[in-house]
Image 1 (cartoon, rainbow, N blue to C red):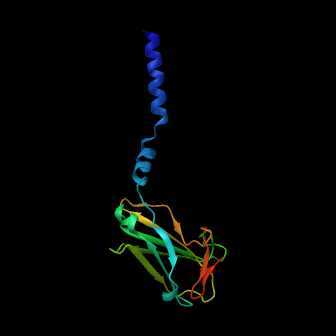
Image 2 (cartoon, rainbow, N blue to C red; image 1 turned 30 degrees about the horizontal axis):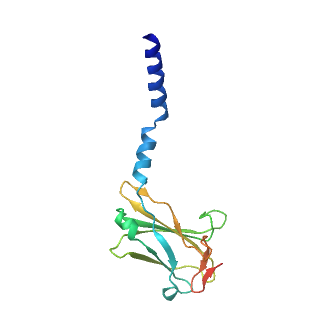
Image 3 (tube, one colour; image 1 turned 45 degrees about the vertical axis):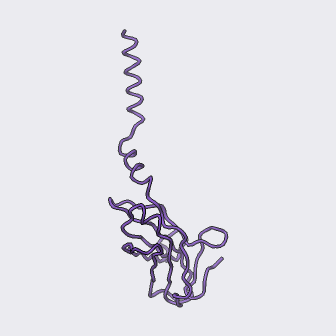
Length: 149
């Protein structure tokens, strides 16, 4: 009987030791947080100093997103140090399946990288969605000119 109790205690200790309730809660909270899709450069509404982009918000809206977080950077790693510029904006969701933003006051001729995430109550954030080129990889854009591939 002592042997059975010893084995049971080991099994309980091992099973409790591998469970992390905080991690499990965070994973459960973020499992259904849909990211924006199809981040697209909006050429007709962009100028040399204004960058317009839109994205498919359908799945994020269905998942309960309350706003979108947009980063525009001169550095592909979205780092603001070493002379890089990072502009962040938060945009409340609209009822449109294609949410959009216009970032003003940019430097003419400068290349920018764009990423968008859906923000959920909590707050929790989805994975990033990037402005991608024809090869499906993140690319820079020059406002008023187009994608840099």
